Image 1 (tube, rainbow, N blue to C red):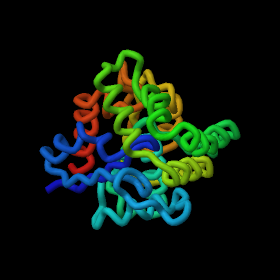
Image 2 (image 1 turned 135 degrees about the vertical axis):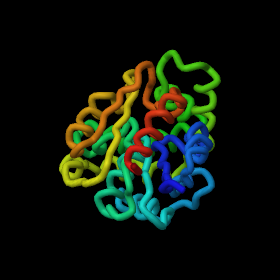
Image 3 (image 1 turned 30 degrees about the vertical axis):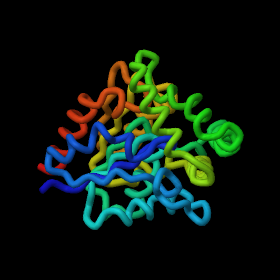
Length: 243
């Protein structure tokens, strides 16, 4: 049996964001855990804001041996913190459309801090209708857009989403990445307008020995928009790490 895989979704996602990954990764011999983060979907609401370290600890509680950690966007930021604070639990790191954290710039902090009030004002359905399509390229098929928007509307709520946004607004991993000693793969879609491929290039440049893959024609949620190519690249990387 290969090492387990822990999958951490983005700030507007949920476990269902990995529906195209779980069967393929299990078929390759991995035991897969795709979480619903604290305060998302069926997961209980945190009693207070966890902060990025709190989310990393919640993720750590789901693995009992070193795991390949696949994090999409916000999930990648949690994965980075997990690798920094609990390195013995991270067999490899896969960062997908991720960032160094929204606290890196004043504009990023302000935009992320505004997310909670926006959700409270609009409600989950309208919030998802406005934000969900941005996760995909303009050419994404309507059924995929519907699936992403619907999953977001079901998954997000207050206060969990606001806690996640606050954690992002308070995080800057610029100085952390260079200290990590773990096999790493960084992926981005070349049509990503949320974090953007340049951010993934910066992460890959800062992570010692990291491999960078830019998927053509894909938006922010590359694992959902280009699942076959995503699975091939990531499973190939995991197999190399295990060899």
